[in-house]
Image 1: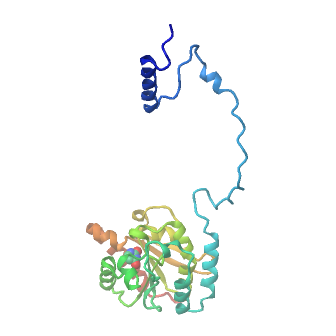
Image 2 (image 1 turned 90 degrees about the vertical axis):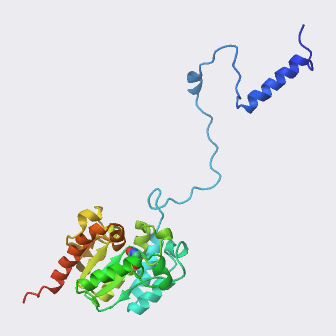
Image 3 (image 1 turned 180 degrees about the horizontal axis):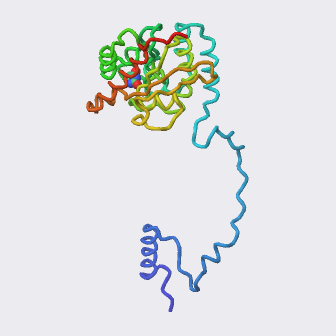
Length: 273
Ligand code: URA
């Protein structure tokens, strides 16, 4: 005799089913075996057509499309006739996402003598630079100043960075952020016309020299920096970043050797033509 629909067996079965459902069991065994591999070979039903048109592809998969921002930066940089106009153009520029991320409102552009023969290019402003609006004014900057003075380069340096707004949490600026700021940096170099560049840290050296080696293999060697339009070339020396030297004081002698190599070239008497 079949059990009554509301008898104890039925309530037991319901409770057991509820228990399995809670445990995630959502398939029943069949009386006959099912070949699921064969079953999987059946062509799936066609997917419905997408409702919206696909978004225009970005420059490279996973990379932000920065071409518009770079074009804007180029136009604004080219229009700046002198350093003051360039500083104003950078301050007004809204194409670099860093401006809206970690930075206070100020753009951090440069400090030092615009007639200086050496341009020091760091990575990007930190917290103290963001507050004061000048590059290299925090602990790393103080160390840089002491090294520069000891090498006899005091008042002979102009200091700037690859990006003009503080990256959040002092992280390294990304290649995309550097690329957006690059037209401004290039215009700074063109207006100041230093004799040589000192590139502080791997992110600066890689970005300006378009090379992939680590800073430990590039430092202390001379490279040629070239403007993107080929109109200008300068000798450039990568060196260790002063923030790295604060963490690794044992590396200071290598940065010191780099500075002496740079000073030696700077003060070398020019050969008569
Ligand atoms: N580190 C940099 O690279 N630049 C600064 O201006 C300050 C710290």
